[in-house]
Image (tube, rainbow over all chains, first blue to last red; front, side):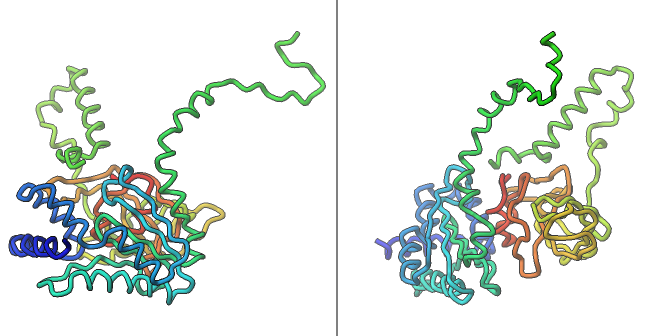
Length: 189
Length: 166
């Protein structure tokens, strides 16, 4: 099944690459312009080509990354469907996680005329590496960075932040001041 | 979402323009301004260059920075570019102090930036997120809307820390 999908991707990319100059990052934006020529069913298949969730989980378990958490962000943000957060034990381990994911993508696209690699940010420092592969974004952090940035807090509570409206009902309740003095309150006389 | 940026103004800019037009239609004495045309009410915004004061929208401790050098571009920095800035105003207990020279990524710019589908996006203020030399954000949260352009400029980290992606 993957072979047929890859061949279709190659066919589409061969026709599209001639019309527009595509770099790593602009692949995603340029694709939105091509949507009107190609059907939406092929759009999903192409966006899954780079890295899918199961492959990411498999690679992370092979590399023995700690504390892998997957956050579905499809309803909050239209740029990605899933956010995977993994921890590495040392900077070298974090870099290794990134290298393993890139190697997996290269293996998938072996023999293709032109390889589209995911964009990697933060490769020099081993503190926080982001691998952006379209619908799935993988964050590889070390423990200190993970505790510092606390990414799950943002993305799991984003949906919860849509309900501060209930706090507004409590905001209009008048709270009487605590009277610690010996004099009685004003209105009681 | 592309439809919301179909016009030239951002959503905030559009409401301002509507407010201006409704004010003018209520005052019949200002007929001179009405005949000039609406394009004169839009200021010509330009790049972020040396001495530009920008707002800091993360929780790194700084409040205002002044750009001392745009890193790319001869005329200045635009949305999504990195600048070198000096902290002019800071919160008392924060990670950066006043007078420190920091790097920053412009996340909101008053100058419009064209998108690949032909629309343009512009904001009401100039805002920056402080990063270190390797591109790691110093703060842990980014406030206010940030545009998609940061993804293509390889600033996905700032996008993940943002509270709202425009």
